Image (cartoon, rainbow, N blue to C red):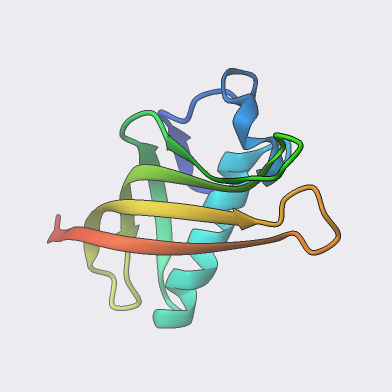
Length: 122
């Protein structure tokens, strides 16, 4: 992501082929979705850096009769450095999860959610 937040710790896409359902650049998608959510809460938010603090946890939720995965979750432990609309700096730690359902079908959908564990002023 040129000109965007600094990213590190995300496994290269070729090391996690199970994430193909999120697209070719899953980390860019994650950061875009994360930024949009934070900006809805505080339009002055500026994300400075996002660190993936460990391997994403990949969970197969559902398989069809032919053995194809149709429901999959991918949870990422994250540390986020940002400044809020008032110029205060924060370090957030939590888990960002994508939930893919009906994957590989015309009804495929992907949702996401954030679980905040800690928020510290820095």
